[in-house]
Length: 189
Image (cartoon, rainbow, N blue to C red; front, side):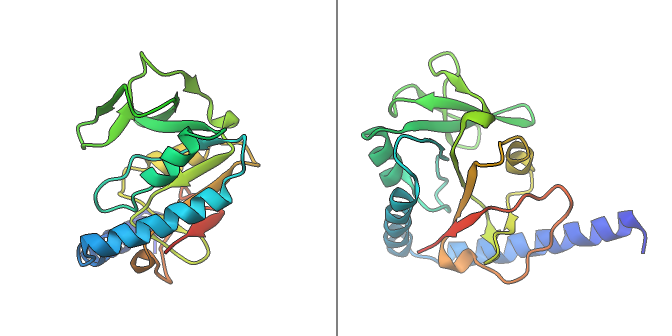
């Protein structure tokens, strides 16, 4: 089998897995998501070390809502950052609160670059990483754009990449390619 045929087969497996995991996510009730999200936020707060910089994400409705953890960090001694998609890349910005955030075309709250200071990926201690699915070992499948994989490839060695997911998003087998970057730690409900 040629390399291009193998890559095509992996892409096909990934698409099928994304569809399956999205169906599982849609089957969760709002109350199940809320309870699970609160537990995930509590675990995140326990995991992220004080006085550190943490890159969060602004959750979509299908993702664990980590705003309780973000709010805690904003009110404590942390440097809280949010990503913004710029072209094919993720850029990170330090936020002081929820003001001056704008909605992207996907409905994601993002920092306004004219009102927030940028931060280098090398300066971030913890990165909270969303995904459609994760394996217990930290393999990750995202939405298919490769934004997080490209970004995670630029961070420094000691940066802890923390995947967050509902239990129903954990699956034993996630097909991977060379460019796929796993997380170091997985937090679920």
